[in-house]
Amino acid sequence: MTIQSEVQPVDLSGAEHIELVERYGAHNYHPLPIVIASGEGVWVEDLDGNRYLDMLAAYSAVNFGHCNPDLVAVASEQLRRVTLTSRAFHNDQIGPFCRELAQLCRMEVVLPMNTGAEGVETAIKTARKWGYTVKGVPADQAKIICCRDNFHGRTTTVISFSTDSQCRDGFGPFTPGFEVIPFGDVAALEQAIDDNTVAFLVEPIQGEGGIIVPPAGYLRDARAVCKDRNVLFIADEIQSGLGRTGRTFACEEDGVHPDIFILGKALGGGIMPISAVVSTREILGVFKPGDHGSTFGGNPLACAVARKVIEMLKTDTFQSNARTLGAYFFEQLRAIGSKRIKEIRGRGLWVGIELHESAGPARDYCQQLLLNGILSKETHDRVIRLAPPLTITRDELDWALERLKRVLG
Ligand code: PXG
Image (cartoon, rainbow, N blue to C red; front, top):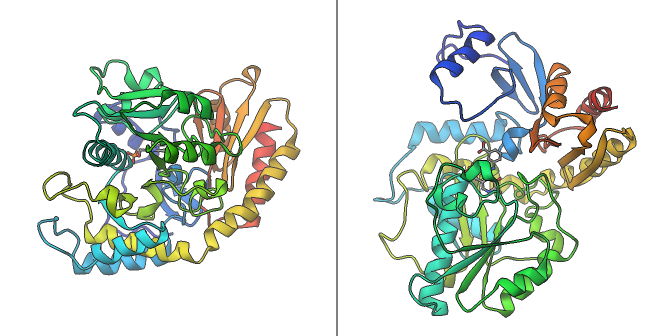
C-alpha cells in the first residue's frame, strides 16, 4: 500500500495523532487506539506498517472492501469530470442512478440524500405527508410506530424515538408523533396502530441494538398487518442491506417487500456518503418542488459510485460470498465453545457475539483482538460485533478465526 505524498505529509506518530484528536476534536467518540493510514480490501495498515484485518468495515459502509479498485476507478474518473452541481440543475449521473436503484429495489422512485439519518428523516417526512395527503390523517396528527432498542441515527427527531438514554439525555425537547413498541412482537404492532398511524419504521435486523434477529416470520406478519391497516412499512436497511446478510436486502429472507426502503452506508461504496429513500410513485409522489432537498443530495460523484455499487450487487457475488462464508463463519465460531460466550447470532457476514457478564466488557476483547491484528467493535457492553467486507476469502476468515479462538477461547 503506497501513500500518495500529495494527500498529506505523515510526520506525526500514532500517539501524536491520537493526542491531536484528544485535544482538538470533540469527545463524542471513544475510538480504539489505532491510527489507520491506508486500506486495501479487507486489510488496513497503521502508520508503522502494521496490518489489521478489518472486521468492522465501517459498520458495513465498506462492504466491498477498502479502496475497491472498480469503485476507485469510477470515482477517479468522475472526480475529473464533475463532482457537484446542486439540484438547481440536472447532472448526467442522477437519472441513471435513480433508475438503476429503483430497479434493484423493484420500486419506482428514488429520493437521494447523503447520510443515513437524513434518509430516515426523509422517510419520516414522506410518511407524514402521505398520511395527510393520501390517507387523510388530520393535520399534525400523524403517528409513526418504532421499535424498542432501535437505532436510526442521531438527529433530534430521530433520537426522539430512541430508547437508549445516552442517545437522548441532554438533547430534548423531542419531536412528538412516535410510539415505541417491542421489537419482534406483531401483536404489539396491531395494538399500537390507530386511525392516525401512517407508518411502521423497523430495522429488519437491529444492528446497534446488538445484532438482534427477530423471530422467523415477524417481518412477514408485520408487513401483512401494515398492508391490512393502510400503514406504510418502512425498512431501514441502512446497515442490514446491500449484501451484508447474504441477500441484497435483509427483508428478502422473510419474503418481504416494504413500502419504503431506506438505504445508506454501503450504497456509497465506502467512498462517498449517499443515502436514498426508495418507494413507489404514489408514496414519493407526495413531494413537490421545494418541499425537501439537500445541497449534496444526488451529486454526480456519489451517484457515479453508487451506480457501480448497484452494478456489482446485480452479480450476486457479494451476497453469495456472505451466504457461503457466513455459514462457515458461524459454524466455526460456535465450535469455539467458550464459557465466556452467551450467544452467537446474526446472519450472513454479520455476527454478534454476546458475552456472559462474568466475562467482562466486550471492549476488552476488542482491545485484545486489536493486539492480535483484528479490528472489531463492541455494541453495548456485552456484544462483540464482526462484519468484515463481503470480499473476504476463506483463508482470511481462517486467519481471523485462529485469533478469535485465541482471544475468546
Ligand atoms: N439506520 C441504521 C440502521 C444505522 O445503523 C443509521 C440509520 C444512521 O446512519 P448515519 O449515516 O447517519 O450514521 C445507522 C447508523 C455512528 C454509528 O458512529 C452509526 C451506525 C452504526 C455504528 C456507529 O454514529 N449506524
